[in-house]
Structure formats: C-alpha cells, structure tokens
Amino acid sequence: MNKTDALIIGAGPTGLFTAHQLKLIGLDCEIVDNLDKIGGQCIELYPDKPIYDIPAVPECTGEELTNNLINQIKPFNIKTHLGERVDEVKKDGENWFVKTNLGKTFLTPNVIIAGGVGSFEPRKFPPKECEKFENKSIFYSVKDKTIFEGKTVSIFGGGDSALDWAVELSKSSQVNLIHRRDDFRGAQATVDKVYELAKSGKINLYTKYQLMNVNGEDALESIEIKHDSKEIKKIKTDFALGFFGLIMQLGPIADWGLNIDKKTVAVDTERFETNQKGIYAVGDICSYPGKLKLILSGFHEGALAARACFKLARPNEKYRFEFTTSSKTIKDRLGVKSD
Image (cartoon, rainbow, N blue to C red; front, side, top):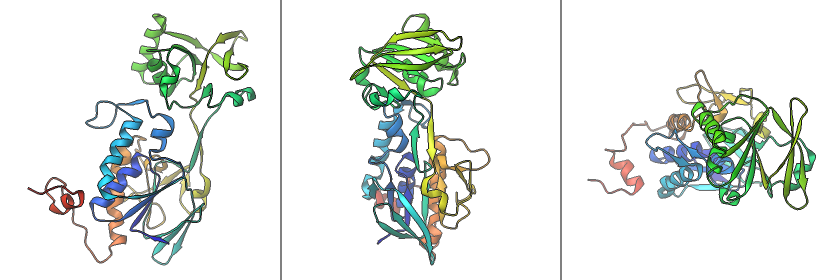
C-alpha cells in the first residue's frame, strides 16, 4: 500500500505542473499514467509540433515542454507509475483507496484527475485496407518528422494539426493536403500560409475529397481519393497522415461517482473539486463556465487544486501562502541557496 498526500492521475503537462505545486507547499504526491511515458497528449500526439501559447516561451514543441516540466520537478524525486490505469477509486474513512489494473494500491486524502479522460485513440481512416499500413506508412500522429524528408506525404484533415503539419513538412517533403470540405477550421494565419504554399507549388491542395482506397504491398504506394462529384483521383504517395481528432474513452472513471457531463467533470473554480470531496479535476477533463482547453489554463487549475489539497492532507495545520521569490522554505525544498 502506497500512502501519499495526493495522487495525480495523468502525467501530461497539467499533471506534472500540479505535482510541482504540491511539492512546493510541502505535500507528498505520486503520479499514475496509463501511457508508458511521461508527457500525455503532448508526447503521444504532437511531440514535434510547435506550441505558441505558453507564457514567456515564444515557441516550443510538445517534447521540449515536457522535458522542461520534468526538469522542473526533478529536485523533488516524485514517484511515477507508468503503464498503469487506475481502475478503482473508493472511499476508505477520510481517505480514498485507489487501485490500478496491475494491482498497485494507494491510500490518499486527495485524488487529482489531470488532463485526459481515460484512454484516447485517434479517429482512423474508414477503408479496412489501411490497417496493414498503420505505423509503417499510415500514421495518426507524428513522432519523428525526419522519416518524411524527401518523400511524398498525403495529409488528411482540416483542423490545426493537419494544417500545421502541412506547413511544417512542406519544408522538406512534397505535401498533398486533402480535406472533405472547402473551408478549414484552423487558425486563419495558418490557413493563409497553406494557400500561399499551394499557390507556389509547395503544397498540392485537394478539397471536397475523401480517402476511398489505398494501394501497395509492404508499403503504401498510392491512394485513391473521391470528390463530392464522384470524380476519383489516384495519387502516388509514400505516407498518409490522418488528423481527424480523438475518440475519447471514459473507461473506469465513469464508475467513480463523479458528476460527468459530455465526457467532462464539473468542478468549482475555487478548488477545482468535483462533487466528491477530495477528488479534483484539472486540465481538459474538467468543465466550468468560461473553460478554455489550453495548457496554461491547466497550470492555473492545478495550482489551485494543489492548495486545496493542503487542508485535507494537513487538517491540523494552516496553509500560509508564500511567494517563491522570497520564501526560504520553498528555496530549501528546491535546493536553492537563500540570499
């Protein structure tokens, strides 16, 4: 049995920063994640994709952001349990008893659900034939963009991910961008850039087309796309990338007695506590009026949830807010020499 002041479910950016905030105020915590690596969706879906909305960081990739957060919590030696899914959460006196699918158990007054909503998987191409090329020539995320250098890449989708990767990969690959509609859902600046690249021949743009078939033996050789008018085009390609969003699976969280609506959990905006005392939700999984699904919002939510945990973890102590710039206690926890 692992006893801790707080258990964080999710090792994405929000979970990592929440752990940092817990340790800063003197609480112990551990992290569980069903992925086999730290970083959550940042690492799983867009490790190389530029992120532009982290305060004071003009640009960074998902991987760089994750590595920086890992370095930030390194002084605290926080225990992480990767490749484990939390299956059971039930009340045990004043604490929560938590059990993973591998049989590991925890006893804690605070459970923080950070980031995702359980397991998630990408929406895939409809043709059954695509399956034999998955993770070889057909991908639903980019983990190593160097494999596309000098190749022809056909990108499907009309949102930010498809547009961003079309622009990025056009620097070193021949790119086909295929979308089932005429209009795109991405940022206008990126949409403008795509049209500019299409005009200069860097991107071949196909709108009102959808994938009908794939051809090849061991590797993808060509694709067939069908227009709304029933016209069919056959295009030679080395790779196909599909960016159609994620199918979110609630999994065991649906049985924890939480107030779930549309696969999100309602929280208050003071403590980010759910309808269950001592269970908090931060990041994409939580909902409240005015919610923005941004990483920076998750950081704010995690900071407030961490401080709410103090009351249950240390019922006989009073939490005293301190600025990190002036607190000797916090500097000692970080191993920083005080002036």
